[in-house]
Length: 178
Image (cartoon, rainbow, N blue to C red):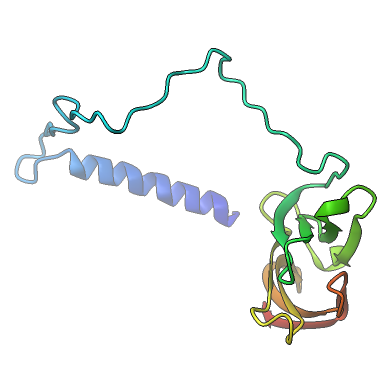
């Protein structure tokens, strides 16, 4: 049985047990009523919500880089060497890099580790971090899920980045945790 199903069943039973214990008198087992919340709203004239807009509930999210598209992006982060380079992680194992000032047509593959990644649902390429001293230590740390002897495994690896920060040397992988 998958861990998620077992966890959900145990969690549900725990919640039911806690609710039943909290609502019973220890002596008689009778249900108790508790006073919850406030009898009246506190007076506060300094923290007021703005008037509702007449536009309804519609939310518009403008595309910052309309010329770019990604498959299941999970993370977007700036490079450690300035704010011009941006990195996008896609769940299946691809990491792209682009210059924010010229994003269209400037998308490059930073790393492609699809063969190492098991993805889908909450699995896949999950995170990336640059070494704090990246100018001198070109390591990049990656978190993903992969297959180890037929079992799904969380993996944290370090890789070395190229000097220009535009590619990752995938052959330099050192597994830190698996």
